[in-house]
Amino acid sequence: MTKLEHIEVEGFKGLERVEFEPTDINLITGRNNTGKTSLLEAVDLLFNPAHYEDFGDNMDSVIHVDHNYSEIWGKVQEQEVETAIRTPTSSEAQSYMIEVVSERVKYEVHFSSSFIEERADDIKDTIDKSAQRLLEEKLTQTVLTDLKDEMRVLSTGSGKFPYLLCGDTTRTLLQDIWRQIAEELRQEDLQNVLIKSNSGLVGLMEFDSEQTELQMGFGEIPLRSPENTGFASFIKSTNLIESIDRTDDEQEPIKIDDIGDFIKDTKLVDDLKTFTLDYLVFEDESGNKNQIPYNFMGDGFKTIVGLLWELMDDDVEDQIVLIEEPETHMHPGYVAELVHFLIDLARDEGIQFFITTHDHDFIKDFFTEMPGEKRDYLEDEFSLVKMDDFGADVMDYENAEHHLKDLHLDLRGI
Image (cartoon, helix red, strand yellow):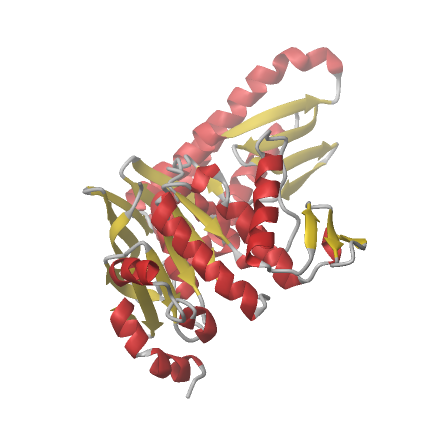
């Protein structure tokens, strides 16, 4: 079983510092904008650092405004794991920029005449040498000071992984370099030069007699990407009511049948005879049957089916599972059954859960009419992580139950 035994988060998004020892089931709650989702994202980055790229245009905003770096540290089976994000030093920024231009950018040369294609390699060499020369001339200390703010370095136990975020300084620098290169190439019989990086096409020099049209379109450029461990899965509530990602896996029909059995056993809907992801068949006491397309079912039903689809996957057994507000759209009856299902998975399948919620009823269901053996388990393996502007207050099962009323008032903003 992969279990996170200790976690420390410092300077990540809105979190200044959070530290606690997780149990099997960790409910993360609190008012809006207190960092619930940020804590899930931090755990995800600890095990899946390549997901840093998923922040897209916000990659430069991950570090807390009052910190110089983000650091996420954890302990798993006595092994330490860490993911850190920071801005590079000036010397690192210079080195990374040179690497981008010399190793990560390639040129595809097209000539106006097909008779001189053999000159392509010579032209590429000329561009490479000119780019290096011009870059060295332009990388002054002033430029580097601005340039390093448009880069981030992600570090794990496997090494350092720099990202070029391509802000205004980077764009201006590269545009100036390629504009000067275009001037030097104007006498050549060129149709265009494509500028490509490991993230795809980033520029085009198009030659038309006396002028050169320069088009640039940058995105983030990872020089090297870290590898994910696969020890953690992130289930986001916004994805659950969308189409389920089906494959040709031979186990898929069995999973669908298992979901149908769960729905029948827990009586989530009445009179269900047949369940598929295309339609449901209902049969009343008189034997009358009717069919309803799956897409006609409500968002609450599709949400719990989406959760079951993710959680009944063999890949999550003995793993860490992060779930964002699973109760969203759900009928209270669905929520109660979901709570018992989550407890069974944690106890019997070795899954460690980190779950965000702002729903007091969802939290209360972990304490309401709980059978003795499950209650005994929760007394050892349940944590309520209450987020606030100063960090997190972590309560065990007994303390959380004692503070349920206060928590209800707090979540309502009273």
